[in-house]
Length: 334
Image (cartoon, rainbow, N blue to C red):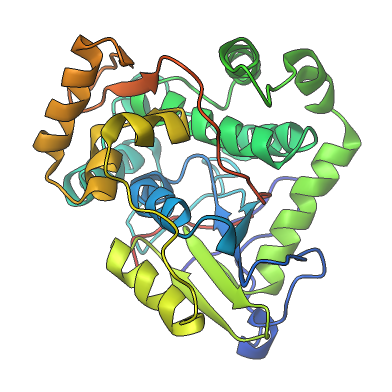
């Protein structure tokens, strides 16, 4: 795998470290939950977006027994230095083809046409934006990262542009009843040196742990043992890894109602709902559309309508506690 060349001011990506170093706990990872997860990702990584159904289901079912932190990886410094020979990607057109492949393989809606019409030049601005949101709390970072992904994967919005990043912050500021993101503070924090430092630390941590592909999840039990999951995986693989690491954990809840599951997360796709309910995506879409007709949900159409529709609850229900943060390097399926 080729090494990404980071922009000036950030460490180069892709350095390898001994396997023993990858298992060392991060000094900042403190939690009373039995299992803590470090999630290495990037807002432009299509396989991280494809993993959302499984990732959300895992956290929903195990609740506060699991905490997590996001680490931004800076997958795409720029197109002059980026190269991903494993996926044969070195230009925007090839990235679009990869997004198409991710959509067909995972079933998660992704609109690859942005790579023809308005290709992002770098993922660094979006990574910095997540760190700026994180300065207002882990829940704000969680919501903002999700909104970034929806915007670029479904709405063809170029998240390398600062005006788009600011618009998304304003949308979140106006759209939530609790734990809102302060858009004015976000705009200020976006250019603070502390935000850049936080992103640098994320990239350094990924380099230290030898993480070069996204998504990568490191799961660590409080007793010190851990396991690493690299790439896109089915839900059963995540459950197996968690169960092997912490067999004492028990399910807190199962999703049985589409409307309640949508309300829990704020916005959702039919593919994510299908994963949680254990049904085929067409059946999940039928349930969601019935809820829209009954005025229990609202829906936002995208360029991938109907498969790419985003469903939202009309009333805000209690959201999950988030133990979040952010870091990564190259996006991959395995």
